[in-house]
Amino acid sequence: MEETVLIDRREGYVALTLNRPERLNAFNETMHAALKRALHDAADDPACRAVLLTGAGRGFCAGQDLADRNPATRSEPVDLARTLDTFFNPLVRQIRALDMPVIAAVNGVAAGAGANVALCCDLILAARSATFIQAFCKIGLLPDAGGTWTLTRRIGEARAKALAMTGVPLTADEAADWGLIWRAVDDDALMDEAHALAASLSAGPTFALALTKQAIHAAATNDFDAQLDHERDAQARAGRTADYAEGVTAFLEKRPARFTGQG
Ligand code: LHQ
Image 1 (spheres, rainbow, N blue to C red):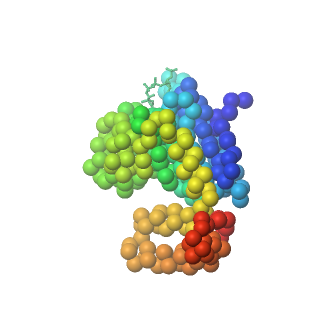
Image 2 (cartoon, rainbow, N blue to C red):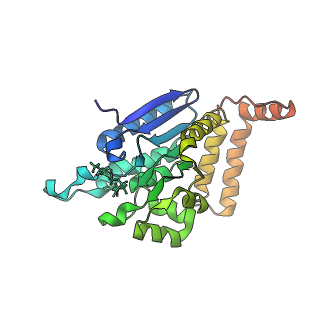
Image 3 (cartoon, helix red, strand yellow):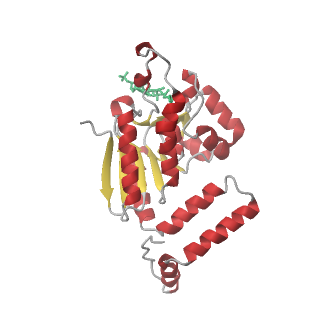
């Protein structure tokens, strides 16, 4: 059977490669199921402390596989709410809820929901030749998979509306300049940098990194006082971990910390 997601378990992290290169890694139901399972496995594996997501071939992901949605071969209109409820929304929720850093290495074009799956990852690196395209307007839709939320918060309403209503490609350098992603990287350096980042994060204080991720998500809806309370409660939990004791001890002993990632 076609392997729609390639799984490469490394020390401390797993690299997942969307693998339908002939369709620029557009999602069909098989690839959704494979990715969901791989992310569940990562969450369940205590030795896995980071996830790296990338695409095979020249694209990262072209969103929904539109060949599966050909109106000419369908007797009645597809229920897009069902598609989102069943596939894309659980996926982006699963990535955001994962208690470890999720790194996107955007190796090529990321279009439609493919762009927005990348944008829901925690640290986004993109090859200089990669582009981000809110392609939805070209087929009579609006951005989904969290795109209206992510774009508006990261780059503001003016730029979000322009990208969403024109569907113009945004280059990796522009995306980095605008604060939509973390960094643009030379094409031939992308995967080395992404693996180095995943390896380094997977040796980090994973429990504290998960608390960091949760706190930054909470900041999207909290006011300042509520966020201070959130930080206090989370810091109380971080302060009780062996990793905190190890971090302080290692600092005082002038040596690198050896974190276990445990809560
Ligand atoms: C594709 C696709 C694709 C199938 C390239 N499907 N084959 C959620 C809920 C429910 C329903 C609807 O959708 C959603 C969310 C969404 O994601 S909607 C948005 C869906 N995606 C798009 O509209 C993007 C469609 N693709 C494109 O506009 C272009 O392919 C881009 C700009 C991504 C890349 O352009 P090029 O570099 O010129 O490549 P290409 O167009 O030649 O594509 C290469 C092949 O990949 C080609 O097949 P072929 O057999 O001719 O070589 C494409 O048909 C195929 N492909 N995207 N989404």
